[in-house]
Amino acid sequence: MTDNTETVKSVVDAVSIITVIGTLADMLPSIAALFTIVWTGIRIWETPTVQRLVKKIGGSNAIDQ
Image 1 (cartoon, rainbow, N blue to C red):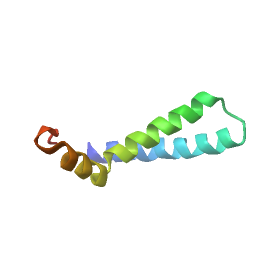
Image 2 (image 1 turned 180 degrees about the vertical axis):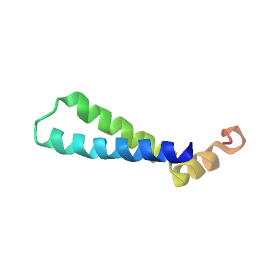
Image 3 (image 1 turned 90 degrees about the vertical axis):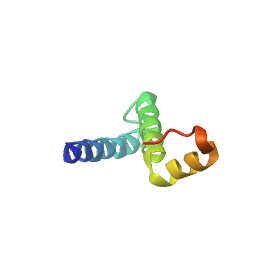
């Protein structure tokens, strides 16, 4: 199951990069840029570094995963 999740993430990352290129070339609408910003934000939020920072700032109220 984990392999499928990582594969899906890789595919969506590739689509995200293509979306950025298309948006910069004025080939896709602004909604595509919004999708890319949201997806990139989600990926950054998932990183262990950000999760450690959130846990550190949140103290005992942080959600344990």
